[in-house]
Image (cartoon, rainbow, N blue to C red; front, side, top):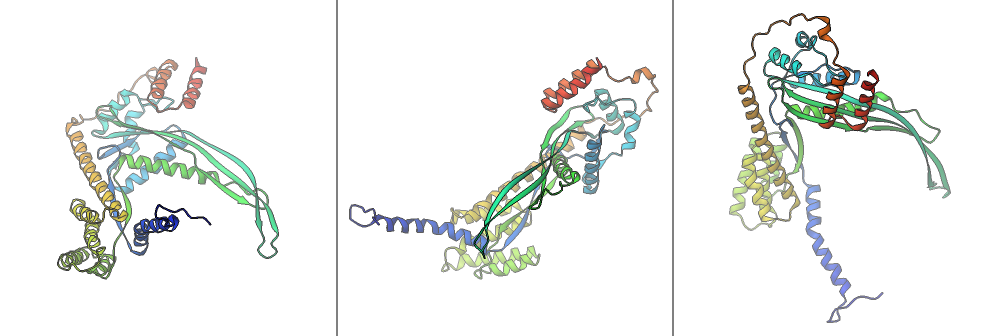
Length: 404
């Protein structure tokens, strides 16, 4: 085999291989550090995606079974969260029986005004499942393998039955005091489940299981819009037997965060006095203090320790990740405070609801359904806002035009 040589005649391939090995050592060491050391779970708290803390809400009534199912699931989770008061549907009937929702779920401005008088400082959540279409298909694929005993080729046919769902929903959050739309979000999903068999086509996965996947995803998105939510993250913690890091980890593992922090701070003081240990231990003991503070939710206090560790070893991916996660936690904490202040200002700026007067009985003709022309206009407004896709818009438009 020929080897490239330099001007001095020294073969280049061995030198190149050695250089690559040296470059790979730090990355390999970091990989083993992540693998060999234990993990600590920290929690990031996200503010509501709405940008304000909602105290009270009501769900607009739904016209179809799918929308009602999603609203029921959301109501159950919201009540269980204890973060927000959900207005009982019975309290809405006095106003809603006088008004009708459009074919697309659009709520009349007059309805919003009446609800605002009835409920006071609240938001109205309008949920519509626009599309929930199930489909089934089957496929076959030839698979080849070798029998390890006979060494003969085995040919088998793998049969698959798939149940899929084309899902689309919209959610609007409206301030009942002003009629302003706080948020409008479109949710689309296409979950599927499959069964496989080598002996003919298997049964299709149940429709209910596929629908449950789409509804659960949509429910989580709406809840994240309305509520604060937590997200666990796992970060490395060093348990070396130097500077008491192993003892700090034992306290941490036992759930004694205060004791773990005391032990880690003692180890940090010791590291400042004892400068004769391996270089890798000094950033680690700084980092451990930061991680314990992070786990306690003291993000701003944790940041300097994590930054000090990274300054000592800038190429350490473990330190980079922890610093990034801590900065994100600080940003989320700030967003949470802004959401709470925004919610307080929103409530303070709303006038107190006047005493509610029972609705005046109206003549039957006043309860007439909006004309096709009015419904077409509202449908076009929803389409322009992006709350209906073209397929849904054309389908609903065709239904209305049949009445003309």
